[in-house]
View 1: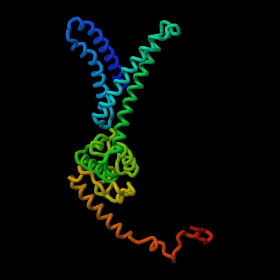
View 2: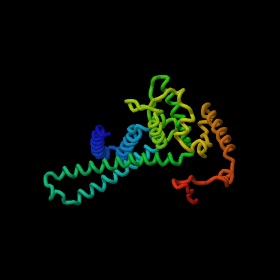
View 3: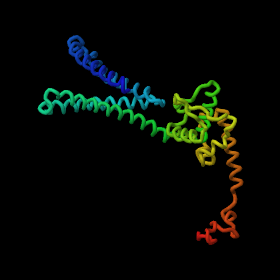
View 4: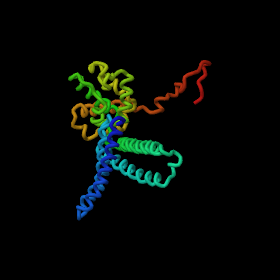
Length: 284
């Protein structure tokens, strides 16, 4: 983006100037005005396509096409509005009296700065749309199932000597915010290791990693509400259906052991708080 961006931007300006000059030639030939209409909207369509490609292909994480199209459309509209306002301001200002022969330089730098702000703002918009969609997604995996999905990807990649990258995890249905959180936990507990190519591999033998160990990394998720609802797309996966059955059995066993009441837990013959150094139990 930093290297090809200015080149593409300059090529876009040159193409726009050429199309504007071409309109004057077409006006005398095209009676119906169809060619002129095409030349008027062609630069905007090309800009929209270029920004859509930029917002979808440049990020390391996969970007849905609908968000890239939305960001490209908004960015194109803002650039055209900024060009109109910037031209009006420059035309009606007296900056030549201040800068003299060098007046074009600060104006050009200001215009480049404004264009980059709009482009970066469009990228932030696409990122925000994708993140907001993740928070409202009903098919979101629980943290435990998301961790198991990552483990499955790593086991499959290990068999071929490959590494798992961020794009693989996101394509498997794990949201970006969830993956960032789980990735930190798995790296800190030496379940995963990062390669020099920014990939991820298992740091231990899969036979030495139990589901119980992974469940301790996501406290509360085993018995939480989210782990009870398995997305429909995952029910056809054998290990996911088996894991759902095991979790339900674990929840049933845990609830049967924890049926005692608070009256039974806090027996009258026992103190609620441990005694302090003076042998006195603090008041409740």
